[in-house]
Length: 250
Ligand code: 13P
Image (cartoon, rainbow, N blue to C red; front, top):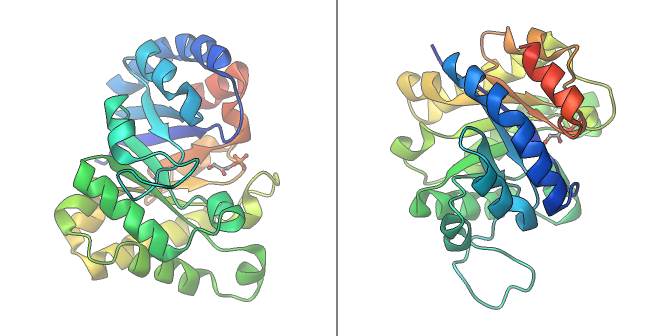
């Protein structure tokens, strides 16, 4: 059986001090969920990563982004060796907000994924269609391109420990979550693409999350789907109470 993985993506929220307080609250629940093979994590801003890593033994700590170069004249960017120094082991790549506001493309995602593989870090690679693409019936085509181009030239031995997050853009922060049937259909489709690109064995190992208006009330129905191994949670991960309830409801 595949493990489950639920990660709170904090986006541009929470100070260092707030991170410290939050992390303390979640050690206990993260430990007990780990015993049930459910990994719980958070992705705070760069500025709070060191605090999160230091304050937690059981939570998975992920960066929200990374640059693909190791160093150089890239004002405002952070590299794989810098994250490794902080003992960060996971990185979100290609979140739709980065694709939308910061011009990330499948090609830059591919460079970032390769940099993570080279550096020995684990990605959570985000894919998902916009509302227009969804309405035009292009969801699968978009997802396929994001996978084929994003994973180009990446070895099976690396991909087997990737997490892929399906986040339909129209469901992010809108309260309009995709139905469990849509989410399961697309997550199954993602697994079928991995099977074609790699192998059945690899496709069965890769963890696939759903993200987009995941709340305490709906988390269980997503995680109960055959091809959904977890959730990437935005808004509902920001308050101690709602994230705790969400985790308790799994
Ligand atoms: P919401 O849960 O706020 O819709 O955000 C989802 C998301 O973007 C997680 O990466």
